[in-house]
Length: 451
Image (cartoon, rainbow, N blue to C red; front, side, top):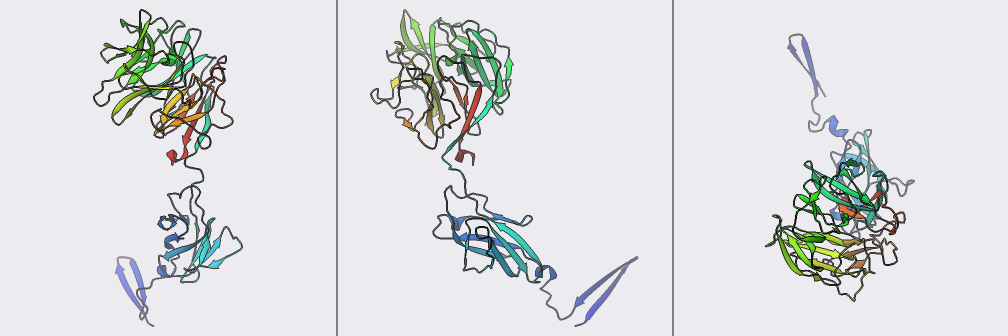
């Protein structure tokens, strides 16, 4: 072997290069010292989906993991580890965390206990350089279909209140929650950003004095909000803060909800009006023009019902559940409309999916309707959750994955909203008819909607 010395002179700089004649020019010192893993995978035909799992190799921190976790309940025991290296490697020693006292050299056909992470120590060709990796298989640790609840916030407002209604509204070009509260005709308004319902600010509310307002039926229609009153005067507000009589010619006794624009449907505000003691359905369009409908059925709920407006297959609907009818009797039926003037009974009166209740909470969540809480005829609050996959025609009691925790108090007359992060928020509520509103928010989300 001979050394070749080449001297380059540039100004005052001398550069010395040496080479070893007769050596393998394709083999570098860097290659001999490379102990990095290039690819990693697991196989076991008895574990569904394992062969298709993609692993990420974090060379900087020595971590090997799958970014997309395998389904909840996946059980992994003995598997084959398929490893390739960036360069040559003398040995890969594996120590399973499930068997911490066992270390063995990796052989492609040998199975490894992968129920817990494993440590892999790779030794390069030089016999000195080593690199250590921790490899693990990520598996979802919570049931994806379980609804997890937490007490999200409390001490929202000052004072105590008998009634409450929370709506989502556009205020000062921002989406906010408006919380209207009242006791004996004294109404107040609190505001919170929809991105942080923990902080609430009181706003100066005007035009809602008196104790005859039915704030539980507060409805947003177009860019305005509306509240009926026991005297038949309909109140409206362009900003949710300043209220006045809407100046309509009808005696509006109850508001049932607002229909959005659908296929061959114009948006309308659905109501019940009174004329010579006769109650009739009616609807108001965006120009303030009223259209009369059929007479109200004797068993149709007038107060304390749950209302929800939605779009399905390009058509707009409103459904009502529970509440009290004109005889002041509690109901357990579902009613629906597509025009606000004609209402149909959706449930079979004799079926009785749940007992008669008032103050229920109703929302659409996870592509189905959720019906929660409420008070029965004895004034006992409920914490049951029912769901419907057919727009309220039938209801199914949830008894395992989507139930409230023990710390959640049964309640009725609460408000419910679903935010952009797929959380269901329950605002306040009463544990009995004689108690004040709870000053708290509970928040829940089906786990897979947060993955």
